[in-house]
Amino acid sequence: GDNIVAVRWRAEWDPPTLAWALPLARTLRWRVQRFDLDAGTVSTFRWRSIFLLFRNAFVTGTLSLPAAVVEGRAVFELAEGVCISHRETVDVVAQADAGRLLNRRVAQDVAEFFDVARRPHTRDPGDWAADVRCRLLTGVPGAGVLDIEPNEDPADGLFALSVFALISAVAITLSAAAIGGEASGMSFDGSVSAAICDALMAEIGSGGSEMYSQCVSDFN
Image 1 (tube, rainbow, N blue to C red):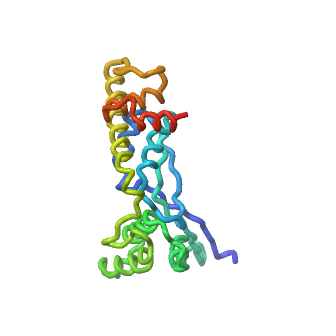
Image 2: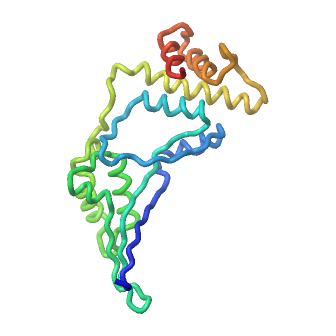
Image 3: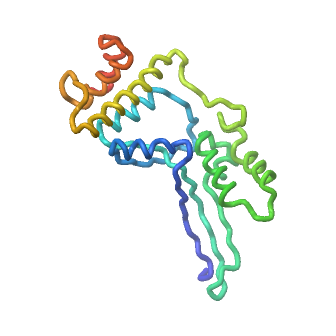
């Protein structure tokens, strides 16, 4: 009716777990691009994904980061211009009720939103947090207090080392270049891609290793 107003809304913020990323992006003059996580996909930690994240950032100048997002629908009933009732639904809650919420990060972001922005002032904080946890986090892989997020094959530990070597080596190289006004290292062909692989190999100490071949292959 004329006295009913329905509104779609979206709340978005920077998750605390990515607090390190924005200062890094500013230092390296990267543009930050946000994307939404799929609530129906299990969150799995992969070192290769981190490598590709930074590889793409170095090549394109854009750092793609997941946003903490909550979306929903609010319905207001008005009487003589005054709101007399307010009903609200949150999309992810419906997914959780249907057993389709599988992404740990999405579930935890929504739980944080309910804890900070939707707790009734009459509810005990501990009781409210327990209810939110039961409604949103129960059954989500990796979201339990003692759960460990699903991980990749432990045999990829060497790749993990290369990721950290890449980040530290290139960040140091670019910082030195910014301060000194000139490049502080050499690359095989002068390209950004080769410079990254050179820095990586310098860190792990083997320019002719299989890891270098993999690095070059990933960039091409």
